Length: 325
Image 1 (cartoon, one colour):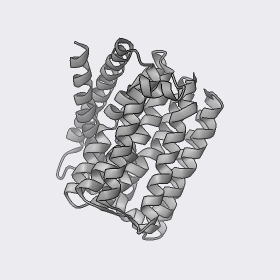
Image 2 (cartoon, helix red, strand yellow):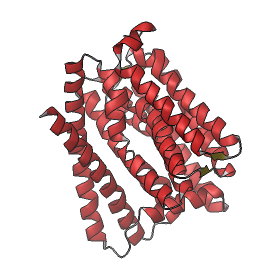
Image 3 (cartoon, rainbow, N blue to C red):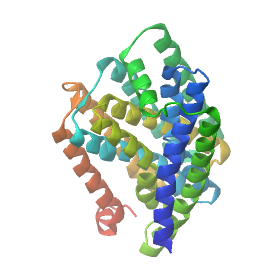
């Protein structure tokens, strides 16, 4: 029954995330909202809604490891797993202008989250700062892109095109959006409850299950979006989706979770996993700036790194060898 709940939660998250994004994009398009704004906000934020709902439900249920582990683990999965798969499908050409700004923001946001986690507590003050930084980044990016035609603006508009439903009414768009919201809430609830039950049955902590199973489950919309974009030859959309999602995970999900339910940080995340997350961002940056592309060989290396990370998380013997419980 627990396995069926887990599978059901994953399916609902995937379908719900897709419906939420496409429904909201359809309504915004009908209302005349620009593609730039749609790609910058609705698409990027919409694909991260499963992470937000799962983290909030984990926090409300008294599982801080699930809430914070989901944020950190999703960012690790986005780079090592999703970027790795995308690069294997089609090598990624990185637009220098877009990455110089958004990549720098991603690194800065990762370091800010590192500083917050090392305090040992995700407080409301931290949440206020994180949400404020997200709003500032979104407004700044939108204003800059409207004033000058830049490569990053092209990426946001391409994301809007990929997520759009042509010739759909506002009423149908609202219906699809509502179905997506219901799917995400139901799916996240099933995913969190079944994941915690699995964690207890196999003897691993809530933090470990949040970093692995929950993180992968809530990252499914990004995986599908990026894979489809790569298959269609739009690798810049896949890459922009990964970078934007990671920024939103830190500022948006971390910030909102802290504002709603301040929670303590599990020591293991402060000792190991937040450092792994920062390391993945640096690894991605190195791959990007050395030739401004992510090759299939680098994609395979990312996947091998993720396999090693998962083995470290789920095999108690490996964790015990370095004194991590």
